[in-house]
Amino acid sequence: MKVVIISTAYPLRGGIAHYVSLLYKHLSGRHEVSVITFKRQYPKILFPGKSQEEKGDASFQLPSIQVIDTLNPITWYKAGKIAADHKPDLIIFKYWMPFFAPAFGIAARVAKRKSGCKVLFICDNVLPHERMPLDKMLTTWLFKSGDYFVVQSKSVENDLLSVVDKPKYKFVPHPVYEIFGKTIKKSEARSKIGIRENENVALFFGYIRKYKGLHVLLDAMKEALTKIKLKLLVVGEFYDDEESYRHQMEKLELGDNVKVVGDYVPNDEVATYFSAADVVVLPYIDATQSGIAQIAYNFNKPVITTNVGGLAEIVIDGKTGLVVKPNSSEELSGAIVKIFSEHLSEKFAGAVSEQKKLYSWDNLINAIEELAKTGA
Image (tube, rainbow, N blue to C red; front, side):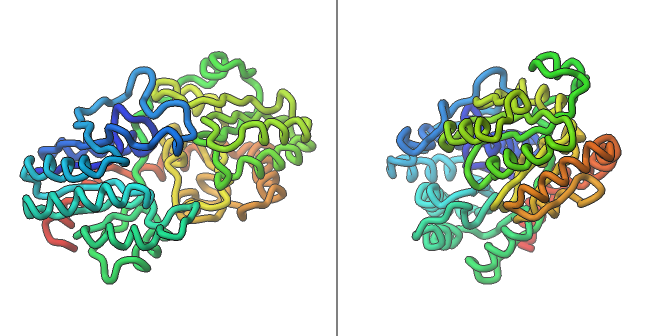
């Protein structure tokens, strides 16, 4: 089967680009795969980060054609034509927000008209966390160009069913991110980032935005520190006002109990932070799913998360981590204290190493093949 993937991809950075690298790796083992990506993904005025391209050594580089400019409709048509020229049987779009619906929708329609191919959307989200008035309309218009869909959490499945009448789709849990290498010795990892070997360490990782609940975690830290010794690692680029979080830390007198690395972390440094941690904390206020949980599982780390979106589908409460209600610093603090006071991190880590076997890339590739072959 000839497949074209249209998405953000290397040399662009971020979790979705990492996902596409792994999708390409596993799909190209069975099929002929090409990748079309962005020449300009976001205009600078809409991008709060420092760089849109990957730094350091990419763990898995892939060949891609950089053509799509979200501000230039001519490139949308061009992407569709380039995709059609590959004579694909299937085009796969990785979809996560309506900002890209016009570009993807035009490219999909042009490619289908010129080549007669089928179109599949792998949906990180159907409707975004931070909603705008035209979101549902744009998504509905885009999905009319689709033949098949893959969803990775029940909340996204429900959103798909609210937008598309009787869609042909598969539910496949988000595979584990295996792109960041192997776990390194905890003492070595902690030495690299200046943390003592005997400390209790919790990790908050990824882009920092309001819906991810770091402010709730900081409040929970204040409460937890009255009962246990604890170091919180906050690692990720601030997409919100960094000063508001710094002010909160100062007001709560968290001092050296919080270590902030406020930058995007290159692929080859991710293993250090996860290897240094005892537990990963996802205090999300709103979510459909999170690739961070699948990075944590790759390193056999238990996860404390909130019961939003599909996060509680991945984290099994009392087995691979703990699940609390969202926006509750009290419950979150209790879960953090429980993990360390009852020495659960090693126990949960063993269960994680077994549980993550369910989240294989083969499951996803099999589902894509089945949809392309039978439509069901």
